[in-house]
Image 1 (tube, rainbow, N blue to C red):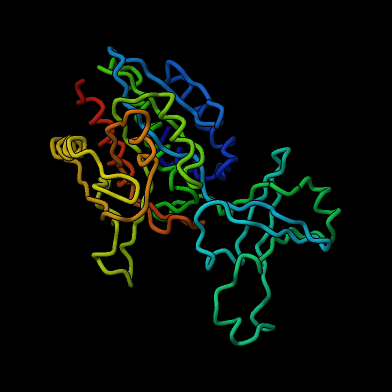
Image 2 (cartoon, helix red, strand yellow; image 1 turned 135 degrees about the vertical axis):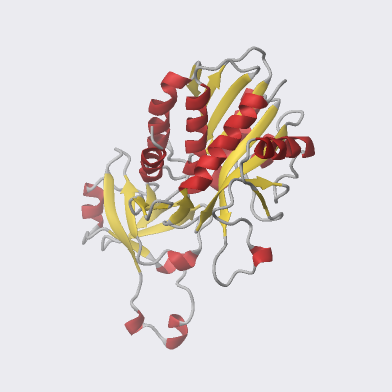
Length: 347
């Protein structure tokens, strides 16, 4: 599948933390012909294996879930109260278009409402609107009308605008943290499908990263990898108002290698192997500034007796918002790096 079509399908799929079924179905349909074994574990991780010459296991991980919201209460007048799922910046939530997924997987559109500025006191206008002051309006006039649409407490909600190509270089879409990583894993499986590897390759499409790295924890325990790489969409902050020393990564500089973050200090030998692979294949790369964020690698490297683990990321501006911006060349170079590493790695 062409990169653009793949990214579009993954970005537009519904996959709030704990409700990853739709995006999992999309990925499963794409990789079923590429894997020797494919299974879904009790938490919902999709685990694809390609057997190699040895039992040595290299695990690639990317998470399927995206931040979202959950219906927490239905007002008598038909408005929906909600609670965040994952790390939202409350300032960007008001006035956004949303999609609610019912128990029957029906999609209901709505908008996040709040009191207009015309009726607010001056001090209220000058502070961010709190989540408990917001609500979702689906155009219903009573709780009964809401329930007739199949909406109940506990239904998941996502802020959603369709994926779009901005120009020949850049695309915009929701959830590229980490559907970009999922797409990298799919492209790698396509690339090595007809090759015999020295080791067994296991790709984990994880659930629940945005709410505590949950899926990666249980997947790594089952897989028992000897080596692991988490592939992420990470914090592109090359923008006005952010000093260069505070920009974790920048767009247009290729895949980002993590040295350390809040969840892991990357195994030095593995980091050096990735650096060497990039240099030998003329792949531009950058380092993600230390300290910021955490990834599934944080849980994977602590699994059982410990796992050598690394993180390779695609730079994305405005993550944890409805409009993530990414360069297609950064994505392609990340695929190239992971593919080259797999093809050159010797047990």
